[in-house]
Length: 332
Image (cartoon, rainbow, N blue to C red; front, side, top):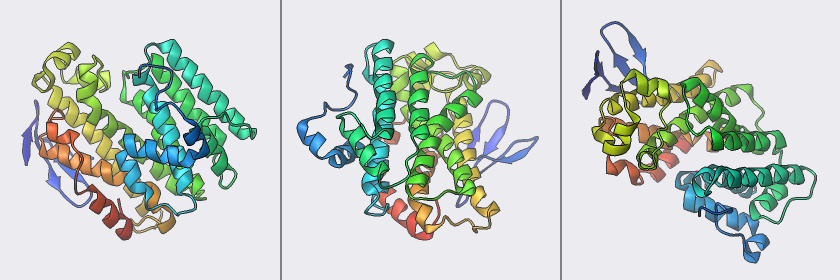
């Protein structure tokens, strides 16, 4: 498939793990508006906090739920607790009526993390589940607090001017969640952490790309300003005309390329550490998160980088099989 960019002929060649892009001058690898964001906790959810977390992940993080089946049975509840914590915090921005209520919610979770560390978690199912599994596994409180602080900051800085700023945000949210999952599995490896850092950036970029149509309807541009300015994209044009906005497909292409670059770098880390491109078996559940990322980028490419294509908002029916295959091939 060949696409025409404003200043270069861009050709994308499929391979098993990368995009290759050529230009005339260079060649590179492309790489409830209420206080509670989720359902109001009930006595039943307090009695079964792990079940509450599992249901929350199933409802709001389908891909994360698919991956859960590959975690060891004795740690799966810990996985659901961590992912539910991530989901809960990520939802705050879009589910509160004003910034002050959002900051109150973040302070609740900041206090909850402290209480968990002191053995006095609040009566909230996610906090109770995190406390339960922190007694069995190493779940560093500073990582939990880092995510809370990043989501708090996001309340008053919802958009990013530069890709560096967005990458730093991804490091403090998605990447830090991967560090927590590696810690849950007792995998203190610098190489795996480095790969997880890039995987987190890729995941954040893809999540934003997928959500662009929703955010555009809400009057929010999630692609960093340095990219949209480069391609002459007018935010108002995107909000009003969506895929017909001038330059939007080129901006999406560049943003998707950055996501793919991070995904490729995460894979390369495994080769540099003499792992032969294979993820260690025990770490594989964490890196299965790369498969939905690669799947979405491939589907976006087929749609000529029109992120407003309705099919991209549908679940990929092949994804469960792709995750299963990736687990047994030890690749993502």
